[in-house]
Length: 356
Image (cartoon, rainbow, N blue to C red; front, side):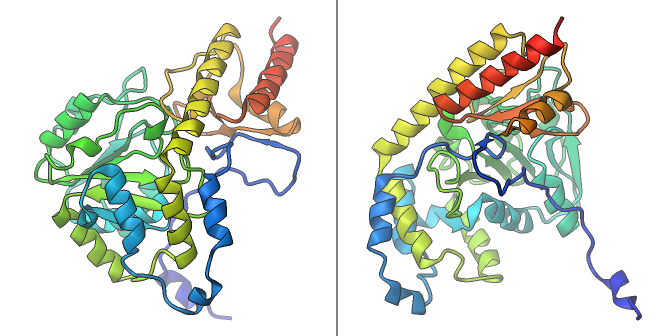
């Protein structure tokens, strides 16, 4: 059978997410999900879903949801864009804003979806090295480019670039769009949202999978000037004018309005994170000051891959990246106190066996 068509299709190397084990009775610390359930208001809203509405198309503007987000961020509703998770938002943002013949810039250790988008869309890109402490050097981004994107706090390193560094990069690149991917900002970092009305070339992206515990719902948000968001909406409407379904719009709106619960669970994660950081350092691990809901750890006397395999054998899943510069690090999502206690117990067991 002829396969002449095979030479005419687009071939890319896709993003590979963390393991999603199908077995139960595990401790899952590998995909940066929130260990706590969504707001009780979400459960209440779900009980009141009008199933008759499912025969109709959802509101294409997601009006109530968008207004709730605008109110929360202190922006106009025309400064808010919503999509199916931040990955979709980022994919559309790449397609919308990175449209020149110049290279876009992002860190060499960063969210591994960025080069996937670049390859998919044929966008030239350059990976900019972090310094020896896994930090961004702002001067590296003050060169000719076709756009800039980086996570803040960074993933998988967990390190925050101070807001003044972010602002200096945005200010030095007024002729291109700068995207700050703030997936983890709610766990103790300072958001660049306050810069939006000052710089019309800035786009800030948030996800509600992490701090709002809605990974199974899929909601991503882009924030920026009215004009810059209008272009993103135009590209989205060229693909799908109904991206957020009725149920997702309803439940996400309920979650966003429950600020007290949001603060409660993020504070729990932060407190657990700081405790586990202290305990791992006592065991000889090197742990950067995390501003995310995960830790990025290494031990000078241990193989990260071997520890990863040991934990997996004991039904504790963490993330190992077989990538240059970070192939002796593990990324560990913050779970409940009980889950992290089990993690520490097994790590101590491993150290007792392998450090003589």
